[in-house]
Image 1 (cartoon, helix red, strand yellow):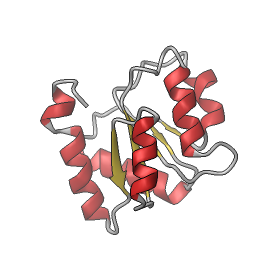
Image 2 (cartoon, rainbow, N blue to C red):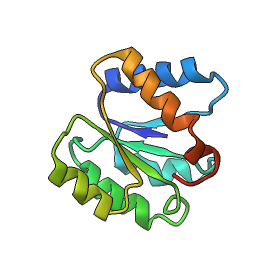
Image 3 (spheres, one colour):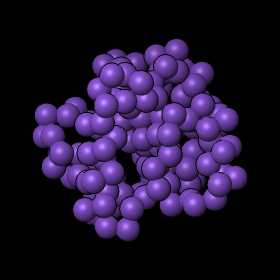
Length: 128
């Protein structure tokens, strides 16, 4: 699952996931408000990627919401953002984020980063 308000980022991220493995089931949301109503009737995701800089409900508030949602609270959340602030990164870890992925500068860098996350040992063993 990816939650990001930027349509270009959503598209590029989805294309990268498809390139890695076209069989990965992947859903996207434009903001945090629509998640709870729409995700309850779907399979629980294995991972959630969450942008920090969104209007209306920012990523920190969305992370809090996800951690309070009974169906999603145990799902690892990876913050996916342009921020490089160590203060911000520390704060999101304190709120329960499992990891942080800085938005790469190129598509190939995104594919490489997602390969490491999606095909890595931690995810395969359910440890992320």
